[in-house]
Image 1 (cartoon, rainbow, N blue to C red):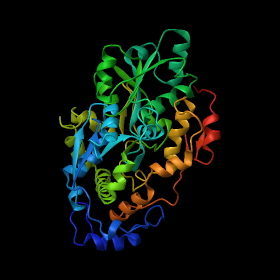
Image 2 (cartoon, rainbow, N blue to C red):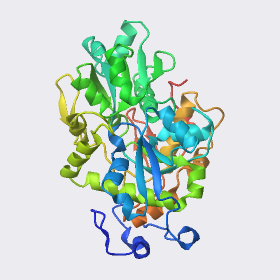
Image 3 (spheres, rainbow, N blue to C red):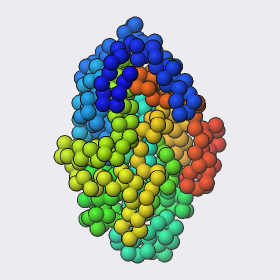
Image 4 (tube, helix red, strand yellow):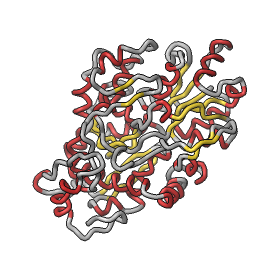
Length: 416
C-alpha cells in the first residue's frame, strides 16, 4: 500500500491495477483509466520546471518537491519563482516552463486569445479552493468604507476616481473583484479605474497610495493588515464558497508530448495537497517552508493565521472561517470541473473581454484534462466526484451550474 510519507511496498503497476477499486471514495465515484501511453507509465521528462508566484497557494507544488512526493512518481519537480502572471504566461507559451501554479482565468484567457497571444492550453488539476480576499485601504476604511455596501455609498457621496488593482486581466482576482463590486451596484468598467499589479507588489503600492483597494491571494491581504495599511472587506469564499482558484496549467502541446510526465506530476501534487490538509502540524511545516526567501519571502505568522482559518479584518473583528484555503479536502478541491472553467468564460464575456459567442462546453472539455486527471487520481488513491459539473450559489444569490452559460452570461444587469 502507499503511505502518506511517500514510501511504497507495491510497484506502480500494481497500484494502477488496484487503483480503480481503491478510488471509490467519499464522492461515490469510480476512477477510470489505468491504460498508459505506449504500454509504459515511465515519465518522458524526469525534471519538470514548474513556475510559481509568491503566494500561499503555491504550497502543494513546493511541498511536492520538498517532501519528495515527486520522486515516488519518477519525476523531479523544480519550483521556479516568477515575478508576475504575465511572466508566467509568456514562459508557459514559449516553453521555458513545463507547467505552472497559475490563475485559472489566465489559462482560459490565453486559450481564447485574450490577455496575450493565443495558444492551446491545458488544466491538469485544481491546486486550491478559497483563500483570497479583497482589501480596502485604511484611508477608505477610516471614511466608513469597510464592506461592499459602505464602499458603494461612499463612492456615490464622494465623487472622484477610485482605483482598484487585480493581478491579471482575465485572472481569478480580476473576476472576484469585478463580481464583488457589481454585486453592490459598482460597475468596475465605468465607475472605477482598474489596474494590474503583481501579487508581491500589492502592499507596497497601497502603502504609497496607488490604489483604494485590491484583490489578491494570501498572504498579501493579511500582510496589509499587519502593516496597518489596509482592511479585509471580503474574502473570496464569501463571494463563492469553495471557488476554484489556482490550477496546474500548461500548454496542450506539452501534454501531448509528455502525457506520462503530466500524470506523474499531477499525482505527486495531489499527494502533497492531501499531506498539507491532513494535520495542523503539516500546515505549520508547510507555512514554515514556503515563508522562506526562495518561495513567498514573508514571516511565517503572516501565512499561518489564515491557513488555519483564523481571520481578522484589521478593525478589531476576528472569526474562525471554516472555508479557508484548502488544498485537498478529500479530493473535492482538485477535480477540474468543466463548469468551473466555463464560469470564467461567462465572466470574460460579461466584461467584454471575450469577443463573439464562446463555445463554453467545447472549450472547457478541450482545456480541462479530465481523463488524465482521473488516471493521476487513481494512482494517488484520490476519490472522484460523480459529475464533471457542479452547482454553486454565489454572493448575489444566483446559482451557477454550467447548464446554460449563454443565458447566465447575459443575465447580469451590470456588465461591460
